[in-house]
Image (cartoon, rainbow, N blue to C red):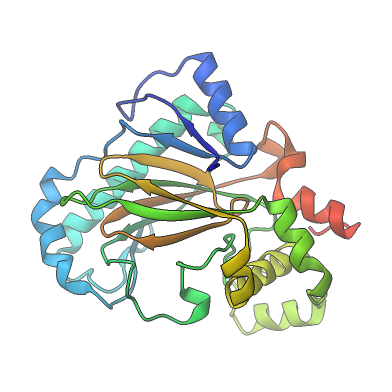
Length: 290
């Protein structure tokens, strides 16, 4: 059974009851997908823009935005001003949502990239590392998180009724137990060299090493992809969902036109830090990783 928890919020600025806040917090930290089936991201202003980008099949899978660098990625030339306005609005609305729904997180959340996914997932030709149709947990190769959680909010904004189809896999504890025994140990010298060469923006910690290894080894192991525990779920247009993508094994199989907002959270801000990937990995490896 897919671990989905539903909440009936219909507006990004809805007030949330204590019961809703508690349910959302527990669901996310337990590794569930928190589904908001009535929460739609309105893109009426950008309908023409979505139509123009239908021709981007086979191009870069996403366009990103942040406040310091603006719009980046293939397709930004379509209308950078309109794209930036849409993505900034999404970032603002997700922050409002999280402040009301997860108030104990609010002051500790660190805003990451906002992304627009204009390209159909199915049929893309990508390297195995970039192939998001394969089950994986998220890790950032060039931007080490140093143990911070990766909380992501998604919205299906497809205008033609097409769902965004995901696979959800085995619990993180099982993933770690499967891959850690054959994972090479981190090298402080290698991490320092990567930083010196500016391959990574900050020093890659042992935690970041193991998370990246899990990401890569999951995607590279075709036998695991075929036989691992997995369930499929379709997110309909007009739905929003959020999930800790560093904890939950997931893959995106098909769908076009989606919004995504990344938020980073220190482990200490969690209600139960023992449920973090950092704590799980440290427990299995018997050593500190950050």
